[in-house]
Image (cartoon, rainbow, N blue to C red; front, side, top):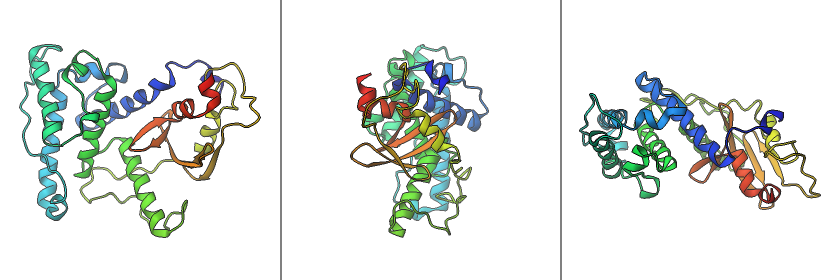
Length: 283
C-alpha cells in the first residue's frame, strides 16, 4: 500500500495505460515488433502496422469462412483489402494520413464498428483522442478473435468471464462453475492461443489494498474513518458485490493493474472506486 502513495498518473488515466500495455504486447507478439507503451501512438501513427493488421484479419476471416461456413454466415466477415503505402512513410505526412484514413474506412465499412468506438485521423496523427484510438483497436482485436486470431489478454479475460456467466446460467446458481468445463477450450479450434485463465490466488489481497480503509489507497494522507465504509464483499473467486446496490462486478489482474469488467468495457479498480465510493468522491 505504501507504494501507492506516489502514483505516476491519475486513476482516470490508469485504465488507458493498462490497455496500451496489453495492446503493445499483443502487436509485438503478432508481428515481432518492439512497440513500447510510452511511444505506443508514435509507433502506429504512420498507419502501416494498422493496415497490415487489417489485411491479416481479412485473410484469417476468409479462412475461417471456408472452414466454418455455417458460423461465418451469422457473422460479419471483412473482405476488402486495405491499400496502403509501407515504405519510407513520414509521420504526419499526407501518405501517413491516407494510411490511417484507409484503416478507419475498413473499420467502419468492413467491421461495422460503431461510431462511439471509432477515432478520426487526427486523433492518432495529432494525438488528439488517445482513448478512442485505444478503444477502437481493442474492438478490432475483439472482432479478429472471433475468427480465431490471437487476442490481447483483456479480450481473453472477457471471453473467460462470458463463458463463466454462461456456465452460471446453465447451472442455475451464481458463483458456481461446471466441473466438466475445459479451461483450455477456445470458441473455435482455429484459435491461435487458448484462453489463459486468470491466476486469482492473490486477487483478494490486491482488492483489499485498493479499498478505502487501506492507507493512502487513493493518494490521500490516511485511512477512511467513516462509520459506514464503502462495502466490497467477495462472492467467489474474481467476483465481488459493491456498494449498497449489491452490484456484482468481475475483477481480474492484468500485469500490475487490477481491472474491473464494467458493462461492455474495462476500468481499473482504483478508478472504479474513485467514481463510486462516496469517501473517495469527496476526496
